[in-house]
Amino acid sequence: MNELNHYLANIDQAKLEKKLLSGLISQLEKDFNDISVQLDLSNLPDTFYDELKSRLMPVVKALMETKPDKFFNLLYRIDIPEVQTKKVLMDDLTIPPAEKFTEMILERELKKVVIKYYFANRSNS
Image (cartoon, rainbow, N blue to C red; front, side, top):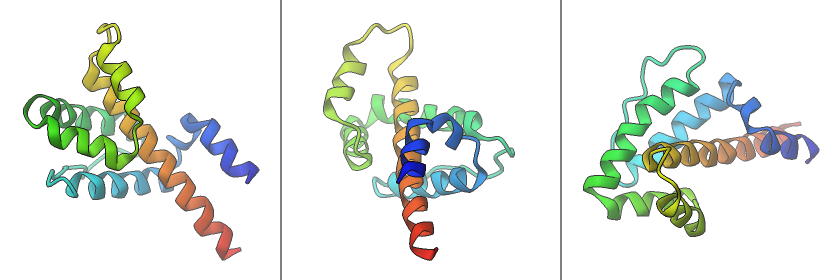
């Protein structure tokens, strides 16, 4: 359990692990597909977390602007707390809300992948 807590506390380290990032892509595709939004996450470079964020942000922004019901449904499915959502929408707008939400989505999805990976490997040991 200490290893899991270590990864969750140091999520930036998990952003560098290729096996976790592959899981992150699968998780993102699954959750976005559930709200009928197709993501094109093919042909990413080896260190692709920042590229992933760049590709996801326009999708998040478009959802926010054109389909807010789907956007909030996505946040609920991903398990982004409503308190955090309200905070982003009411905060200082020096960082665009779409950028903040994109980062929140990526980090929450990566945490899910870390937890799944930890327990899958733990049962195989």
